[in-house]
Amino acid sequence: MQTGKLILVTLLLSLPGIGLLVLDGNAADTGAGAAKPLADGHSVAFSKPTEAELRARLTPLQYEVTQEEATERAFDNAYWDNTLAGIYVDIVSGEPLFSSTDKFKSGTGWPSFTRPIEGNALVEHTDTRFFMKRTELKSQLAGSHLGHVFDDGPQPTGLRYCINSAALRFIPVDQLEAEGYGQYLYLFEGE
Image (cartoon, rainbow, N blue to C red; front, top):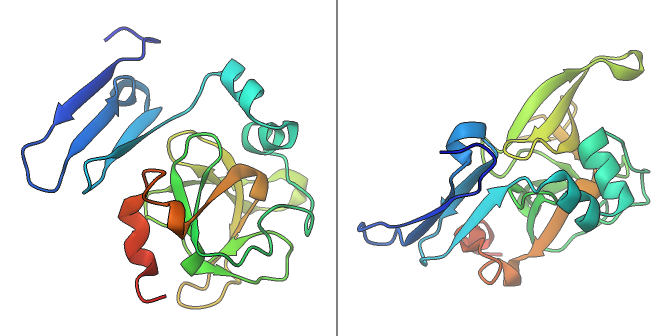
C-alpha cells in the first residue's frame, strides 16, 4: 500500500452476526485507523483526520486540549456535571472512551470515570510538566490528549480518570444505535 493514500476495504464476513467490517487501509501501516464490527451489520471507522481537517472541525479549545495538551477550566466545561446515560467518544476520531455507568462526581470540576469503556481504549504516558509526575492519557488511535489518571478514585478500581470535556463528544444512550455504537447498549440494560 502507498503511504498517505486512504484505501477503504470492505469485507463481508460470512460468520452470522458479524456483519460488515470497514477498515482504513492505512491502519495496518500507521495505527491511525481501525474499525469495530457491530452485530447489526453496521460499523464505525475510527481514524485521525488531517491537520487541516482538525483545524476546520474543532473549536480552538478542542484543538488546544487534544493536540497541544492544554487543560480546560474546571467547572466551566460541557460534561463535568452531565448525568445523562450514554458514552463519551474521542472528539477527534470517534473512538469510544468512557461510559456514563463509570462516571462519578469527583468534586474536581472535570468529568471523572473509574475506568475506560474498553481495556485498550487509552494509552498512558508519564507527564513531568509543572514539576510533578502524573500519568497522562491519550486515545489509542488518534493520540488525542484526554487528561490524566490518578489513584484516588472510588471502588471498584480506585482510579480517577480525570478527562477534559473538550476532548470528548457525548452520545446519549437513545442515539447509540443511530450513531453506530449499538454494541454498547448492553451497558445500559436494566437502567
